[in-house]
Length: 87
Picture 1 (cartoon, rainbow, N blue to C red):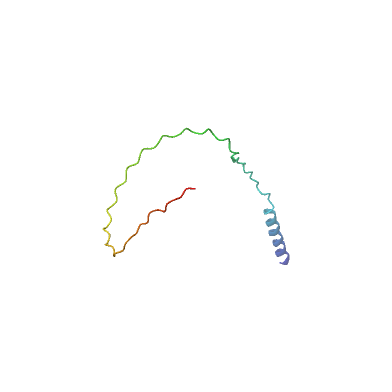
Picture 2 (picture 1 turned 90 degrees about the horizontal axis):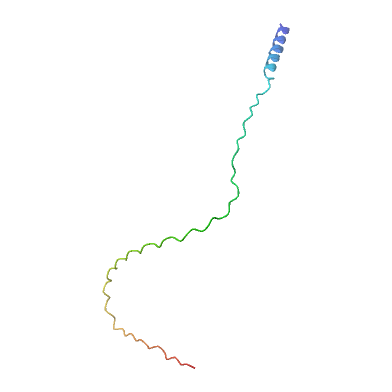
């Protein structure tokens, strides 16, 4: 009985190892060419001047301000400009 167990273990090991000893399948993936942009080319010619735009509309008049309050009896003195002398 010991020999039969030993023989069956050896048989299973041999079958197991022979099943795993296959060559792997190699799949060659085709190379895809990726376009890469090159350097920039020379600048193009300058374009012509565009047409002048149209005149805008005139704005609305503002509202009238409130009336000012009366003064506090303050006198305002406005001095004439100083005379200039020419050398």
